[in-house]
Image (cartoon, rainbow, N blue to C red; front, side, top):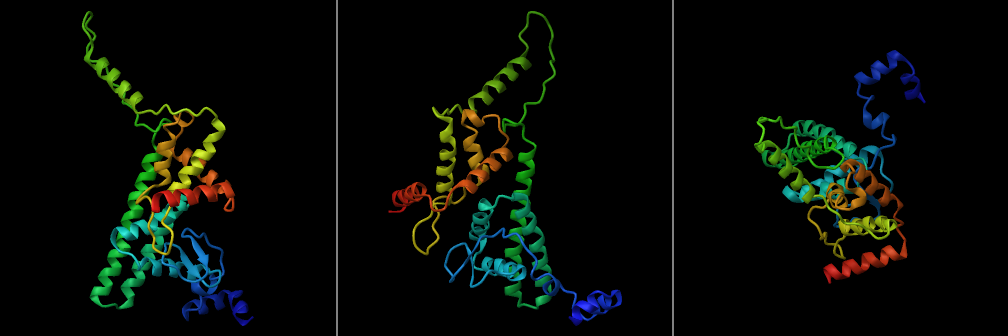
Length: 277
């Protein structure tokens, strides 16, 4: 009650700030937050999920994300991040979270007074995360600039020869480029377009497929929604769709997939048995 009274007074707020009581961990610990990294309530497991005994608060969640990251180094760290990134629908938000929270962790690291070895290991891990965020951000920006077909646009070539009776070499080059682009556009066509949702569901199951047991062994080292969008563009139905539009479609299908659907569970088990038995 006294704290609230002080916060309602401008002078009181100033004093509380000076003595260290206007900290995020005090004032905003119960704020809602976006769980970009997936978590479960229960005992710790040796997989990519975060584990808590009780639903976490905003700051305990952040702390556990970076504690969990200390279990991985090098490319294993990137696989951990991409496991959560691939499952996240808000790609821009995920990248932004990594960027700014990692910068915050770097500032904390400077003040912790670690040994040189420990400092360098942690610094290298955080810098790898920032590099990943930069690269993924550039990929998203590049995708946003693609035309609807998903293929780079062929620049308009100015005709350099107009002499009658002679074949224009520029026109010949343009024809060759157009033919090459048509060659790389898929023509897969379903008899029943209503089966497309199930095709995407199968791809989602394959994307997340892993070996049974505690050991984390995924089927794919890397299989993002961006990759899935490239596959879907080979279908006639999606040939002219932008990548980000297809990523939204993929996310919507994921939302609609029922966790306890017997057909999906049976298929997931069959795929697991086929690949890992």
